[in-house]
Structure formats: structure tokens, C-alpha cells
Amino acid sequence: ETGVTQTPRHLVMGMTNKKSLKCEQHLGHNAMYWYKQSAKKPLELMFVYNFKEQTENNSVPSRFSPECPNSSHLFLHLHTLQPEDSALYLCASSQQNGLSTEAFFGQGTRLTVV
Amino acid sequence: GENVEQHPSTLSVQEGDSAVIKCTYSDSASNYFPWYKQELGKRPQLIIDIRSNVGEKKDQRIAVTLNKTAKHFSLHITETQPEDSAVYFCAASNSNYQLIWGAGTKLIIKP
Image (cartoon, rainbow over all chains, first blue to last red; front, side):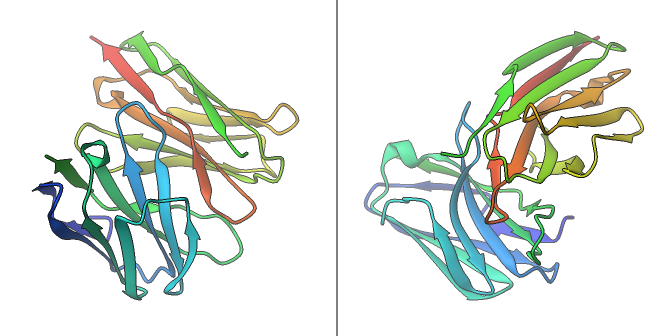
């Protein structure tokens, strides 16, 4: 167990649904991330939160809405998704202290948009 | 913009042979270079990393080399075993301490 937990593990949703992905880390880290992993593509960084403040938003469509209520929890709210949004969504955390450090990943949520 | 190129996309080697995966990066400010292994259906996990003040690092059968002048770094796995079969990702840090990822290499170990 790496200390980063994601729920649900699998999610099937229609294009008009609203759902949320949850991530929790028990490592005491101050930074949390959402990544999208599609087949045969690099990991795509979506959002970064450092000390609960969003520091990066890599041109992600507004149908993805992140929320970070505290340094241990991260959510990704989904609405009006498209079939091309189907992918594995990975949460990660790290300790940012002026040096790049190891990112610890959750097991991911396999999302299918129908 | 910043990018990391990783080659090959698929690598098939005989069990017991060595495997080498190569990455190049564009940001001269990069100073941290981790390698992650992702087994089928599992999360990516760090297997080895190197910082820019070091040219080589080794951990049992795994080694990483870094050439800052040429902006490339490589993962070397010796005496490959079936459990080495996975997708391997390289990454390089940027000036915001974020990681820029390669596209991954699927390593297949043939028995």
C-alpha cells in the first residue's frame, strides 16, 4: 500500500451524468496531482495542488473540475463528459520542498464514458 | 515547449539478456530524472531515480545513466526476468518541480 487511495476503481457514466473521483493520501505530502493516462500516450498532467492551492491547470476542459478541501484529499468532479474522456485517471502526491521528489500514485480510476 | 522523448515504444528481449531504454529531454533546467514501472492493471511505481549531479546510479540489476551535455538518460536492466515485463516511464523535472513524462516503453521478456 503506497498510501494513496482512489475511489472508485471503475466508473461507467453517460455523457449527461455527474460523478466525482476521490483521492486520499496518508503520506503527509503537501502536493497532489491529477493525471490522465490514455493508451499509447504520455501521462498527461491535468491539475496540481500545492498546500491546497491550485498551481497548475494544463488547459483542461471545464467539464473537469478539481477540488482540494485539504492537503490530504483531492476530488475530480466530472460532468457532460465525452467518449474521448475515457481513460485511466491517476492521482498522485509528493512532498514539494524546493526539490523535485518521488510521486506516489494511487491505483487509478478506470473511467468509461458511454 | 518542454518534452521528453522515450524509445523504443516496445522492446522484446530474451530472458537473461539486458534491456536498455533511452530518453531525451529538452529543458536544460531539468535536474531530476526518475524511472517508473507500471505492471498491467497496477499503478506506476518508482524503481530508480538520478539527480543531475550524478552521472550513474545502480541498484542491483537496474542502473540509470545521465548525460547532461547531450540531454539524455537511459535505463539499463541486466539479467532480465519474467517479472520485469511491464511498461516503463521516464520523466524529467521542469523549473516548477513538475515531472514531464515520456510516452512509455512496453518491455516484454520472452521465456
